[in-house]
Length: 158
Image (cartoon, rainbow, N blue to C red; front, side):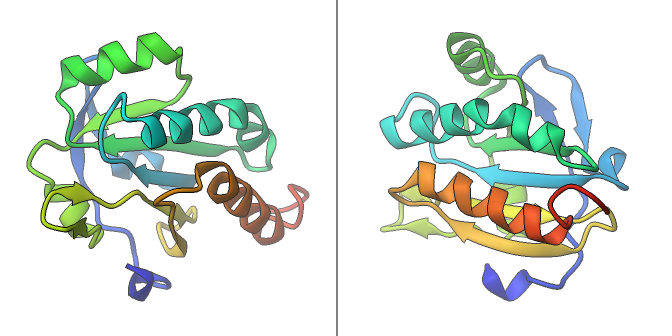
């Protein structure tokens, strides 16, 4: 995955938790954090999503604002229930066949546990940072915010 740093992020379309079609290319020109998580409701993934939620306004306050997008193999219905349960302010996408996860080289551990990985993607869709957050979602989100702050000059420039 870290071998993708400096490469262009693959373009893709997936269904949102509302059943709408999400096109990654629609976010061109924006900073993005694309994070892959294993399963809605699992303790680590729940904590990770809640940590992104807790810091969401900080991500949005950067200049330019950063889009947060979560992706897992869960169905649209499972995503909808999970998003409503946690009152998540960001988009959740359903990747049931792991097609997008494979595009981003997100591994599966021990044959059945999808990795939890995040990609910081620039306005020109270049991947700037890749993070694995197997067990430490709070530290993971803090690292992403720190890197975005340094990339965007503390939110003062793009």
